Amino acid sequence: MQRAPIGDFLDVNGAAVHVRQDGAGPPVLLLHGYCGSVHWFDRLTLGLASGHHVIRVDLLGHGCTGGSSGLDAVSQARMVAGVLETLDVEDVLVAGHSFGADVALALAEISPRVRALVLIGQAPDYSYASFPPGSRVLLPMAGALVRSVAHRRWIRSAARFRRVSWFEDPLQDLADHAVTAPSMARVVLVDRARRLASSPLDAQVAALGLPCLVILGRRDRFYDCDRTFARYSAVGARVEVVEGVGHSPFLERPGEVARLLREFVVVRGKDD
Image (cartoon, rainbow, N blue to C red; front, side):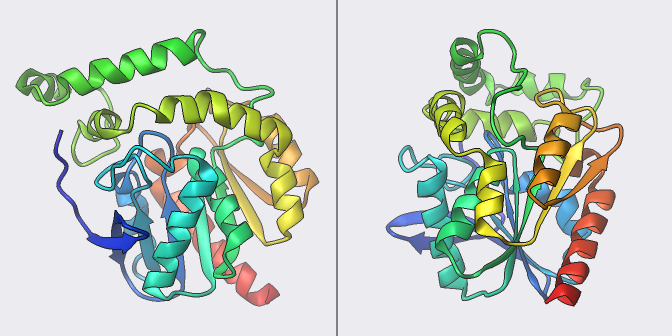
C-alpha cells in the first residue's frame, strides 16, 4: 500500500527517513507509537507550531519510512539521533507516545542534543498491562488482514460510518497499520516485554536525570493510570492526567496536550 509523504526524506545511515518540519522556535521532536506515523500528531502540531520548531519522524518500519530491520527502540534511537544531527538542532524536547516513549529514552541516552523528555500514555513496563487475551497471536493475524483489505474501495466507503475519527483521513489509522512492518508485532509484544522487565522506563528516567513530563489518559485501556502515576512520580517526573481520554490523549484533546507541552517548555527554561 503506497503512502503519500508530507515531508522530506533524509538519508540516515542508508535509510530514507520521512521527516516533517513545521514552525520555528525551540525544537520539539514528536515520536509516534506502534502502527503510527507522523499523521498521529497532525492536530497536536497545530497547537505547537506557532511557537516551536516541530519535528515529526516516521520510525523505521512505519509510515513512509518503511523498512524491516532496526525496529527495536535502541536501533530506532540511533536513526533518530542521525535525523537530529542532519537537521543540526540542539536542546531538543523529545516527546514519545507509547512505543515512542521507549525510543525517546533510548535517544536521550545516546544523544547530547536531547534536553528534556515527555512520555505520553506509556507505563514503565508490562507488569500490569491489560492487553487483549491472545494478543501475541491475534495481532499479527489482524495485521495481515488489514494489509489485505486496506486498499479496497469498499473500506473507504465503510469508513464514513465510523462514529469517531481523530484524523483528517478517517482511514489514517488503518492505513498506518497496513504499512507497518509485520515483525514490529514481535518487537512490541515479546522483545519489548523482556527489555522493560529488566530496564523499566521509570528506572531509565531516574538514571538519565533529565527533566521529564509524563502525560496520561485517565481511561487508558492498556495501563492503570493511578499505578503509572505513582511510579513516575516516585522518580521525580512531573505527571499530568488528562481526564476522560484513553491511551492517546493528544488525539482526543490536542489543545490540552499542546498546552501541557508549552508550559513544560516554559518551566524547564526557568529551571535552566
